[in-house]
Each structure stands twice: as C-alpha cells, then as structure tokens.
Image (cartoon, rainbow, N blue to C red; front, side):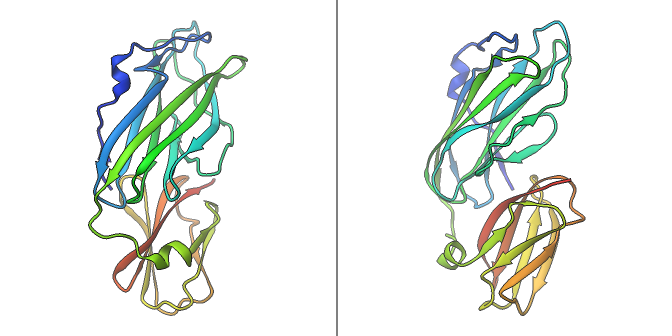
Length: 235
C-alpha cells in the first residue's frame, strides 16, 4: 500500500489558534489534490495541534459530517490509534501530550479507484473544557487504476461487521470458487490469509489474533481482486 506525501494548499496560511490554547498547524483546514494509480493507495492529510497550555492535555474528538463519493473510505488517527469513520461518529479520546508537544490529527482518504471530491469534518476539544474547534479535511482525487473492480464485487459481496472482535462474516460468495481472503494492516503487510475452495452462503473468518487497529480486507476471485473493505479490530 502506497501513501502519498502531498502539497497541502493550507500551508499558505499560518496556524490558527483557538480558545483552548491548541493552535492548529498548518491550519484547521487542509486540502489535497492527487492522482492515485492503485486500489490500495491512501491519501494522507495532517493537522497538528500544539499544546501551548500550562499542563498536559488530552483531546476528545468525533466525526461531525462526511461528504464523500460512494465507495470511498475515510479515517482519522490520533496518538492512540487509527479509526474507521465510515458511518461512525463515536467520540474518541487521545492520550495526553505534554506542554510544548503536538498531537498529529492525521486524516486519510482511500478512494478505491473512484474519482471525486470528499470532505470530512472533525470536532475536537480539550478533555474537561467546553469549547471546541472543527478540523476540515478535503481532497480532490483523480484515479488512473489499470484494472477496475468487477461489478460482482460491488453488488454481491458483503463484509460485516465493520468493527470486529473474534470474527468477521463474508456473504455473497456461494456461487464462487477459488476465493482468497487477505487482511492487510495499514502499511500493506498481510496479517491473515484464507483460501476458500467451496464458499457457502456466509463465510466466517477468524480475526481473534489481529491486534487492535484498522485493516483492509481484500477478496480475490479466480486471480482477480473483486472487493476491498476496511474493518476495525476492537479489543
């Protein structure tokens, strides 16, 4: 999986301060424009919150809104972990960071070979305080993937739940043979692989050995990749 280092248009702005003493750098709004050439390419955006207060702090945050093309995945990472935000507005809390240190509120878009423009808005506040700031992540992405995902992957195969503990289920493979299921971590390493020669209506994959975090599930059918989905492994 490749990650893009992008020129953010927001760099022309000075970091903005706010009432809670955590100025955002380069700004509280970042924008990326890129061309992706692989189904697994991830576009990264970074906003740093600098602790100008007199004590160590943690921040709580949640998804306010997301306007992205159908088929895109999007997530946000704090100094604890990365979290899939697709349909997920759960409030998260970072680890504390010291006076003078910064926390990287790292946004990611995964377009899965789909052109378009997307935006997600994240509300952040210092734990114990009342004021908040909105961080805005936007991207305009063009894709030139060599091979498109076949239609079978879009309308027949379902992977659920998106937040897993001991297992995940895959539905829609009953008419397929020679299926490979691979689970990748966010740097592209294969963490799990199952070869399924005679799928049933629902296939269960054991995920109990995966560490907590965000992963990409890829399904190959007759040597061709038909589906990719993002899952989150819970404790």
